[in-house]
Image (tube, rainbow, N blue to C red):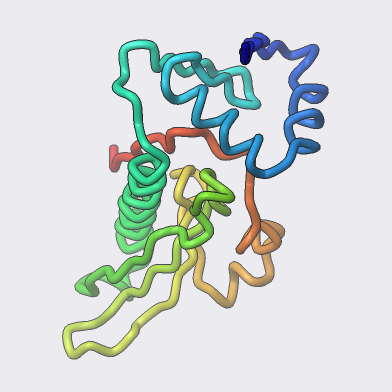
Length: 171
């Protein structure tokens, strides 16, 4: 009989649990995350607890689609904030991508979405990299992003990202 063990994440054990989780096979990691989403509950690395006891079961496909959709929406929210802060991009429209590193091997993705700000004649006014999880990280011009420490996260599996992705909003 398969037994599931739930361990509460505390400030004292979160590094130990993260290390143990990262040492697991990718398939076991995916199954662990999926199990959390369909009823057991998932405690994120920072001790934030998510409860999915009343949530319907999600297939792997549905979970991946949710994560991708939310990554695109969050990238767009951050791009709108970027436009508001930079007058030269007022009047441009947003063309965004999902976080393509979200897949069956990595449900969290890398945390970044490619976004283009396009002017009225279809010319790209700016290439951005936008956070899919943090309004405080927001967006950076691609050339600036490449110089930041966050650029090493691109095309990786960033397990510090919460599942499910939170929905960002413009306040």
